[in-house]
Image 1 (tube, helix red, strand yellow):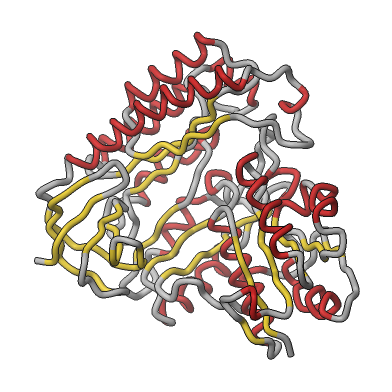
Image 2 (cartoon, rainbow, N blue to C red):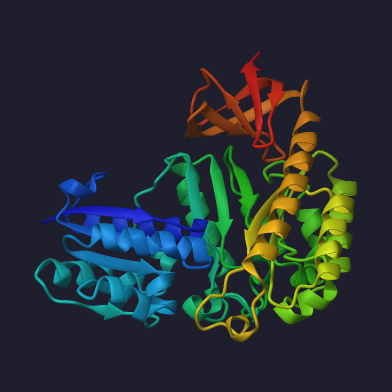
Amino acid sequence: MARIYVEAHGCAASYSDSEMISGILSGAGHTLTGDRSESDIGVLVTCSVKDATANKMIHRIKTMGDRPLVVAGCMPKAEQKTVEKFADNASLMGPNSIGSTLDVVNDTLVGIRREELSVDKSDKLTLPRVRINQSISIVQIATGCMSDCSFCQTKLAKGDISSHRIGDIVRQVRHDVQDGCKEIWLSSTDNGCYGLDIGTDLPSLINAIVKIDGDFMIRVGMMNPMYMPRIRDSLLKSYESEKVYKFLHLPVQSGSDDTLMEMRRGHTSKTFRSVVEQFRRKFPRSTISTDIIVGFPTETDEDFAGTVSLIKDMRPDMVNLSRYAARPGTEAAQMTQISPDIVKQRSRTLHDITRRLSLESNKQWIGWQGEVLFSEMSSGGVRGRNKAYRPIHVDGAELSVCQNVLVNNATEHGLAGIIV
């Protein structure tokens, strides 16, 4: 039996994969350690959706390559040659090959290099898990997506949508709630297209989960705007449940319809505006999060101005801002790229705007008092979330419980308060 170090990066699904990897290895008798220097082998669950993230993964691969290593997740599937360039002895395991974990690790320990990059038949919902956070259950409701974005590498790594059945997901959530989880994160590459391959949809799933007995909250993960018109009304209805955070992550990526078409996003800026406006009318105390890519190869000054206008008009509460960088294997990587200086300037301009809007949004919560579920440790103490999924830092709060909080301060990153 070996001492194994597992490290994850990227989206909630990557962390969920790492929990399954840890569960499989622990169940087989291996020992998990939080210190790479004390391990016999490392498992690195990678993300490669952004250039900056991919560079970080390369650094970790090189750093961790001094002893047996398994590189898992999206990067070995989407950029196998890159991984092999920096760690030619490492075994490789794709995001849809988690069921092969034990064989890959055991072989790697005795010097046999393995490649498991194809889809195995394991049902992720049935795999054992060792949770990173005992209060949070990360449930992968599907793998892959239905989009074909010209800039994105995720489709190369995870393939087409494959949704889990509602009944199987409900059983997993019920088990995790009975096991003490207070937050349920519904995660996938794109929650908006959940169920299209099996004749159901996201609102139907939410409606089934909220019927589970217990005191818990549901965080619905990212949904691409292109699927919103199909489920918008029923989704708004499902969000009426007190068990659902009033949080909407809707990545628009650009305010220019021309750029969105070149990105092959499948939606227009009007689609985004319409969903956000209706969500806010129904849930005034809510949180809207979006993603923006600055400097896509075809983005003109006019296109960028359209993005700035959209952000100023819609005032999202959170903006995940990224500078475009070509990802290997994507169509956009073959396009003529914009000058890095222009991309940097546009990014700086939009960053200043989004910082101001986030601060203004958070300041509106000063003086608010209500229930906060505390589920995470942070550098500022214990962090919880209110019904709108706003992060609130409170000294002296207890993990895994709801407490009454008065918000007395705000920054661009979140809120702070006191127990009352």
